[in-house]
Length: 125
Image (cartoon, rainbow, N blue to C red; front, side, top):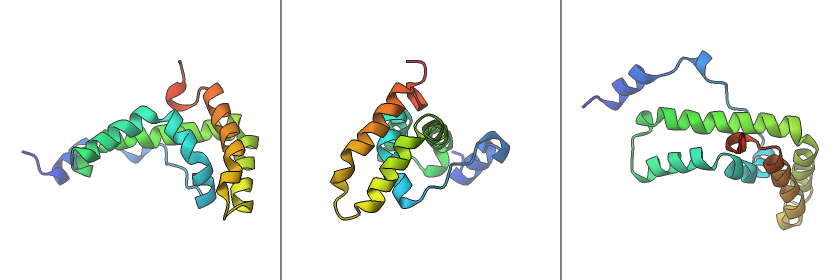
């Protein structure tokens, strides 16, 4: 069997092959997280299954890249097609740190926009 480190080096993509994952603030990530669950469901499911099956992280590079690429592509789509809903959800969360359930409508509007815009894995459905 190939040691995980060698397998990683053998299959590693170059940095030019993969778009960097955006860095989000905590509030941005909280606002975006449910959109990611909706729009990157299959990639996330595959990654979670690999973790559950105790596959070494270095042997899950392609699966991890799918998650990262879906996250990036979906977030870019949110910023392009749903920026007002995203900004409203972030602002609501910032203004309601102790009662985030007040932001359910803002988050639902963001999720609806992402789904209607067919972002991430929803593209082509």
